[in-house]
Length: 205
Image (cartoon, rainbow, N blue to C red):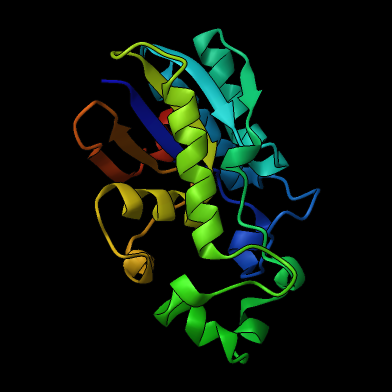
């Protein structure tokens, strides 16, 4: 049974300041995010990981690279793991977005949400599922794979595999630099870990 560890990227200033980064280029990890990535790399260095995949955005690659280096691997960019395309909402503050009528749709009926000029949650869920299943098809049943992605895509794909209605996916929490595990097999895919957070102090000497 191939196991995929879904890791959300570390903290960046958009997360800290409550802005919607989306796919905006140039969003990098801040100092806390770098500590989180280092902590993940230190803990995972001895794990039998066969490959490290990442969304191609800077904040995910910067989280994946220390992990891959500690494991003696290279990061494989995978567009299917990328952040949901929020279109015109990109770079907006959450304070501003909460005033919009569509904000309620995001949280109460996300299955009906299409971001203006961007993706729907349904499309993002299908994209993530396809990406993970394509990755799994390339490895042996007992292999352990790391995939670094983003909060909503991880929540959406977890909701799919545990049989949770898409309209309830916002009930899940995926913190920065947290680890969520899915075990794939010929039987139903199983959730084996959700939102596990490693102490940043592990990154310090």
